[in-house]
Length: 506
Image (cartoon, rainbow, N blue to C red; front, side):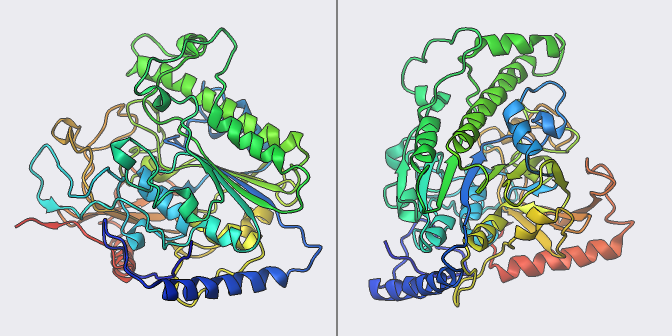
């Protein structure tokens, strides 16, 4: 598989880019030469870390005990945080799955990629069940195979690469939900080993009878997690570093538990009149099941003697689902650009470098991972033709107070929900336990200030996250100068990225 480099403009939707094999080969070889030369310069005895990236699905920022949840039991993820570095200001690149994953894989914002929503099984435009004033961009189905991913970069400098779990940056193959498209799946994006497997998530039961409930105290065996732990054990005596991406389906809907004993155990924590009580009880058990699976992965690393020089990086792809998850104290949820939609749990453990029990309030975002992992692999982030939006945050691993001066960008030029927009509540609040209407919007954070621009009425809201994490006090009029500066910054960056916009109809 050869790759080409091209940045600064979004891909044409749903069409394969026409480029000669000769040109693509020359461009990929140029990158390969840069990366290999950088790796050779390190020296034979330099020990590069294994990297295990655990990406979970729809886990809210406050869902874990180590992030303050009052009753969710997450001992394994809490242990990961206690042994490493917990980020208070970790961010997903998007408030929705596919866009966030594409950005993480490439080190580019969804705006630059032109991949801002979820993939579908076929091309077209959003179908909203209500009249809306703006026309949203055409749906993007696939992350182009020509995009250079983390796995491409690391395999070019000698890393073994493996992927297990949820891909969701290619159209649903043969109309099967989440099925990998053979032309745009992990093996076409730098992963030498990749097996499609839903594990024990309810996705695996979609077209058949659900497996039996489990006895008290038992967690489900998960074939996808087992594949990941088998891979880790297989590398025990290897002298070659590896990059393993474990992309969990948990805690995405459908939230159905085989661990009825867990659901019953959580009954005592929620009053009979608690909003969405039944869903939240199921969700609590789902979160603890996820924690069990994360523990299996971490135990495999530790038990096989790879603990000291393996970076484990854990994060969620976006905020929590509002009908199941209490995102408080954050406003909003998955699908919007309030903090509840984009601020996520983020943890790094690397005993050889990261001191145990550290916390950092440095803002780190998913599109920082590619340049960070590439630097850790002793390779270069430079390429003549490629632009990255992320920044290597390697320094924060040894200095949690390291705080680069920069801005973070989000862009969501779509409406949500699509088929129930007319019935959704008008505005996102804190702990609505209901889906709200999301209208096309963009956001920028610089320092403690965050500005959200709403495209329908060209309105902005400004928040001081240092003193108002719940985004309750709009300062756009009181702090008009800061608001104007951030609006100019946001527009300039989106224009530089050739961002697609929602535009007036007619």
